[in-house]
Each structure stands twice: as structure tokens, then as C-alpha cells.
Amino acid sequence: MKPRFLADADLNHAIVRGLTRREPTVDFRSAHRPTSLKGMQDRDVLALAAREERILVSHDFRTMPRHFREFVTDHVSPGVFLVAQGSPVGSTVEELLLIWAASDQSEWENQLTYLPL
Image (tube, rainbow, N blue to C red; front, side, top):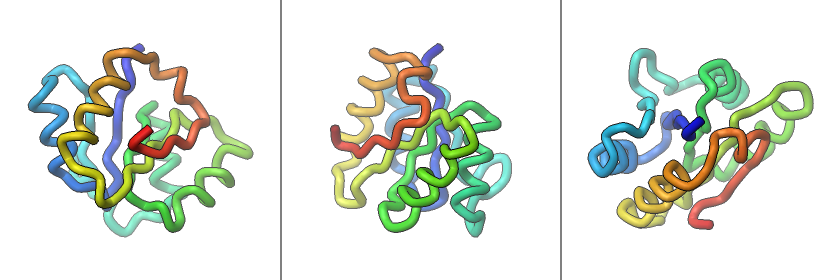
């Protein structure tokens, strides 16, 4: 199965727009639809991503790695991609597009991956 993504509330929305414009068939749910993730605790966001079988994409280098490690001790996660805040949007879009095109969702299970690779 192709990777499916969920944007964390802190993710630059230009990344979501850029990827879905570049490849309309990518399944990348915004953090603002249908309900906002803003204000949700990391563990709750990770649980939502797991329920929806989506890889979480976030800029949260400060707290997400710790919460992810705790979460995977007793849950299965589709994975988390942490994108450096200063990464160019175009490069991030291309990297996510390559991941989407060349990998299977299961390859990222319980993996915390820092982008750029």
C-alpha cells in the first residue's frame, strides 16, 4: 500500500499543498480537516495517525521524538517523519513524493525518520 500522510498542526501547509499539487493521488490529510489537531497532545495525535493508518509529518523536533518512543512501546505506529523547520518546501515535497512513489507504507512502521534523509 502506498504511504498515506497526516500533517501535524505545526507543519507548514505549503508542504501539503505542494505535494498534492505535484501528485494529486497522494493521500495527505491536512491537520485542519475534518477536525483541527491544534492543541492536541502528541500522544493523541500519534494515536489518531495510527487509527487512520497515516504517517505523521511534523516539524516538532522538541517533543515528538520522546512521545513517539513512548507510544511505540505499547502501540503500532505507521511512522513519523520529522521535517527540519528550515528545509525548503520544494525539496521536502520532492522527498515525500519519492518516498510515496518508491516505498510501501509498511516500510515506515514504528520508524522515526528525519527529513531530509
